[in-house]
Amino acid sequence: MQTYYSPAHLGHAPLQEFEGGKLTPAVEIPERAERVRARIEERKLGPILPPSEFGNAPLVRIHDAEFVSFLTEAHDEWVKRYRDPEAAAVPSAWPARGLRTQLHGHIEARLGSYTFDTATPILKGTWDAARNAANVALSAARAIHQGEKAAFALTRPPGHHASADLYGGYCYLNNVAIAAQWFVDQGLRPAILDVDYHHGNGTQAIFYDRSDVLFVSIHADPSFAYPHFLGFADERGEGAGEDANVNMPLPRRTDWAAYSQALQAAIARVRDFGPDVVLVSLGLDTFEGDPICRFRLQTEDYKRMGDMLKTTGKPTLFVFEGGYNLDALAEITVNVLESYLAK
Image 1 (cartoon, rainbow, N blue to C red):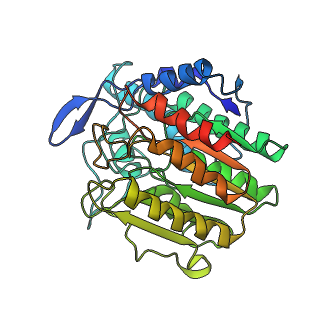
Image 2 (image 1 turned 135 degrees about the horizontal axis):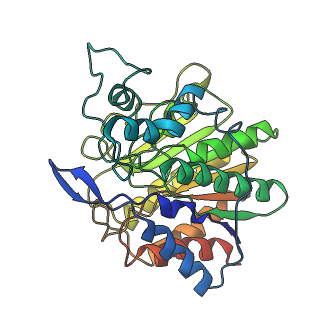
């Protein structure tokens, strides 16, 4: 299996995040991707390749052009205002009910208008990392379009919480959505299966009124889990997209016995859609020891996950999302990929 990877992600290295009412050490850190890359090399999964440059054209097929422009200049604007090139740009206010968004003018107002949490800082290297993560996903998509049966996009920062004009949840550009749209533009019919612990609210929002891309998500119930405000079972799409959005929220402490039933149903829905290609938002934060999540999947369960995912019978693009247990992340990621490849 070809893996695509860019070292540009190293320039996006948050130190802290605001969690539970206090500053805590960041969990979405460069070591996540570096450990996975090292394990892929160690297990000889296949070549690790650099991405090609695709420019902004595929980004603005998914994201609002003004939003993309904001991301490119946000940190520079922050530095002009606060005179600290190493500081993280984080908003202090948001346009909640009764307030107006401000997409121009003061950087604080623009930050608050374009994000929905405090855990997703914009640093000096954030835009370069996010742009290259999108290139990684697009390069892996092109490899599949050229005949590869599977490819892995080792994307960091992750993407599935970013919508057309909002970033958050550690995500800036929606890598899997950008790749899915690229497949559509090549005349193919994609299905996205999101197995991250957290609902891919950004991916859902992007495709919610479309019938040409299926979105199926298995995740922790948003009644207790981030992102809290999307991901409920009654969200089925609207207009042309009705029934092309499927949410499968699961309770705390879900183990493989329950998770595998949901995964089997999700794969059946994907097969019914009749896609040409499947994109898996591969979040590994369902692991029992993940520091910020509450499921109970074990190391060996990720081999079973890989076995099940290949039953879609379609070329598959794996796009790296969450997963924050550094001791286990590399092992369980490669377990999925190796099992998918196994005869």
